[in-house]
Length: 457
Image (cartoon, rainbow, N blue to C red; front, side, top):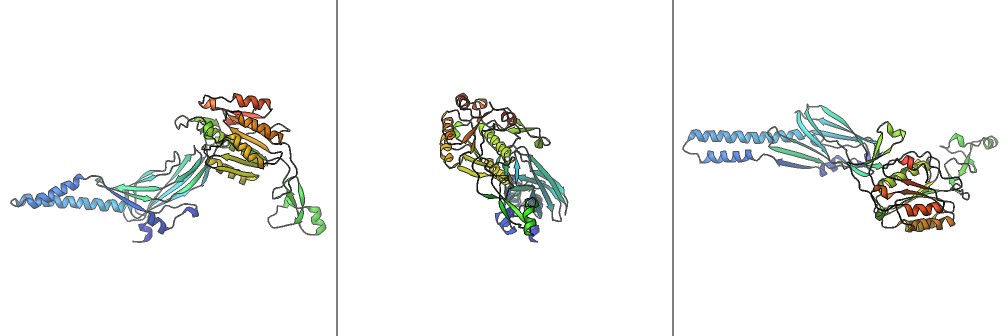
């Protein structure tokens, strides 16, 4: 018996998460369950009857024949069950380790029968914790040397870090005497980013995002600030070549750029557990409109009716909005722990922000006013703060007034807790924000985010 025939494997497309055959063999476990004990009682009773029946030879022969018959059925049923679950191979291919709420997570499964016997019935059960990921199957009549394959596409409805796997394969005999389960404990992670919507109309008023002093820091991005020239290096874009210097030096000369003086954007997401509202309900989920990219797959995006989910989705959408406009964006959030991402540009920064928001939970104990006071000390003059919060107190608004005297501008995104079933309203902070002429947007339950973040109050 070869090693490949004796081992059922679970394969991954990501080499970093694929276990070796030896490791998988150590982690593999079996479980054999006797489902019908009546036949064992009958076998024991017939054996005892055959032994105690001495005078009647015919009856003793009948009991012995019945004992042999029951013993044969028991042995053949056990061997049938054992053969049915051995010499098989199970391969699992995950298309991508990352997805997004509203998009699809796709997996492919391949089952191969390497034995000389057909597999009449096999149940493959997936124990992933990804919501609504239905990858379990019941396979029947898989002939010798044949294979079966199926594809599972799951619409992601919740953000977070989830586990794909483990798998169990189980089978039974035609009489239902034995049930054998084989565990394949290999797992791999998948990250579901929060949803994002296009905010075409979200643009702070002119003069609210002033430029700062020139930043004397070289960058690989092409900006409007040329810092100097240098010799061409492999990998430099031809658009960076400075042709007058090239003609003068008789060799390729490229321009070096430095960061433009445009103010950075810092997104503050309030994850204080005491100010959150709403209860997640899988059966009654609210919806927001998807951008055109998602509408080809699903017209409506299911979003849990909580201020936490709406706030995280708004923060992700704002980060995407500014990064696509080549702005440097940073993130501050106090959830399970302190999360601070320095301001930067590009898709890589957007990926970092989405990964952080994917696992962020409203478990923080620090109020928003304390966070603003603590983190604003390290921000330079001219920075803009985008504050996403459901807090209904005035303290954090007073802090933003003090920050404005230091040259830090603020934009408020209020997630109205009253629309999520909470008895408190945002009237007090909204009044102070209007008095201080702070651009303010209000997000309410059951309202599309794209519309809520397009028109300031």
